[in-house]
Image (cartoon, rainbow, N blue to C red):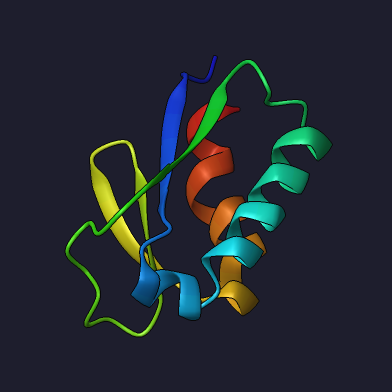
Length: 85
């Protein structure tokens, strides 16, 4: 059985310009599509310290990643889904 997790997406100015809103929308769609509303909570935050990376800072639990909008769905499938299913 999977576990509950928080996913925190940076919505600070740098990450906003890199597409954080698109990542939020993708994750919202995927959470609903996989019926994970009771297992995943999406949160927004300001700078998480990875602004120099090419993507948006996304924290899955305590682990931080740099994600670009074009890879958001694959990131969710590869990183999030196995941990909560």
